[in-house]
Amino acid sequence: MFSFLPFLRTPKGIHVKVIVGLGNVGNNYKKTRHNVGFMVVDQFSKKHRIRVKDVKYKAVFGKGAIQDVDVLIIKPLTFMNLSGGAVKKFFKKYSVELEDLLVVHDDIDLALGKVKKKPGGGDAGHLGIRSISQSIGSRDFSRIRVGIGRPEDNSDISDWVLTSFSKEEKLLLKESIDIAIQKIEDFLE
View 1 (cartoon, helix red, strand yellow):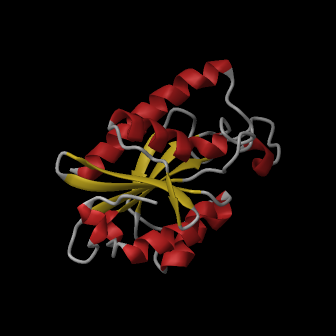
View 2 (cartoon, helix red, strand yellow):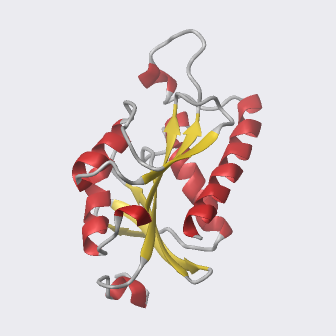
View 3 (tube, one colour):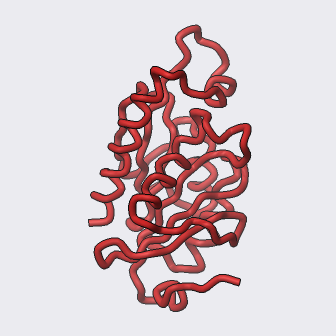
């Protein structure tokens, strides 16, 4: 059984910011490039002491407040390309406004170490973003794109996103995660 904070008991009229981290569930995927969204929200929730352990709507989630802003952090428990179903359930249940939704995800079109906030728009082939857009019926939500780069040898992208980071890349990854956390905090202000 879950204990919801008051802001989650009465969704109508209460302002809540929702942060969604995208990734794939399971130990095989835990440290792969495709799980950067999970890595960011895990570090963010740890920094702000928000416990992301409750399970509902095919997602693990946590709730808390950061400087008087009510925050809901969601990690879908489905594979990446089915993330939209879980997001839609929370979106409807808590009457989330589009401007209060932020999705954190990997991006092959950005070099490792680069992080950008995007206010909305297309999915650029990212199936997790596509799933969310289709499920909630809009592309007008903010994203934080965390660069994972492309393979140098033009190998299959689907194989590339499921590889782990090298020892050298992990230093850039840590910096990327720190930058992404700062961008989430900026979103909450």
